[in-house]
Image 1 (cartoon, each protein chain N blue to C red):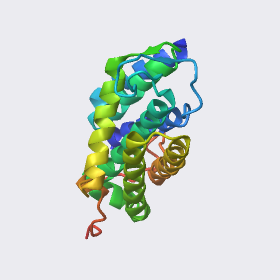
Image 2: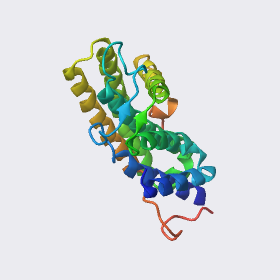
Image 3: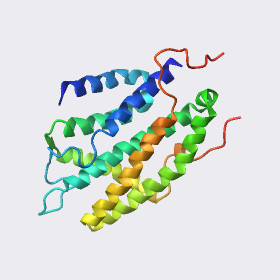
Image 4: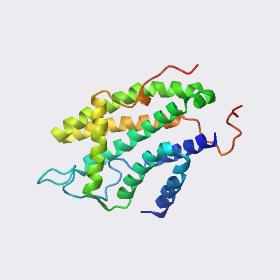
Length: 152
Length: 77
């Protein structure tokens, strides 16, 4: 049980980091030319990099919670069936959002336009909301054992 | 990078042994903040790594091959 609690504490702490730096939040960095986000003869597309980076983290956060719940399902079910039920409501939405992001990303890489970037940012925002919702579905981390059931 | 960020990230890293399932997320978060919070240069290598990761997600999503933990399964009995 302590291990589960440690993981929950870490997931919650990471969720604070996730929302701390969005696409427009960290603008002091420079993207080196010549990488995947640079087209020949053009400035590196730092906005696209930032959106992709934020999406990658939001996706990982959602995936981590889904995997965590699946791997510890029985124990979390005993804690509260609501955890699985809440995540089960999010799962189809998350799939839909990841497909939407992937479709928008494919379109943007083929034809990078400001409108395409806006679409990516809009979908990213939905993904970040889902990341927050998945974190919230987990039981609140406790510093003592008193609020968690003792496994007999 | 601000000291508090170092402290937090090092604490997460230290805790990984107790929580191997979230190691991937911590690593990505650390990479991301290591580059962005520092206000420095995002290298070509970092950009390529990110692009490869998101490409992988994109391919899986468009082929309907997201991880099994994303599927709704029956409740435990």
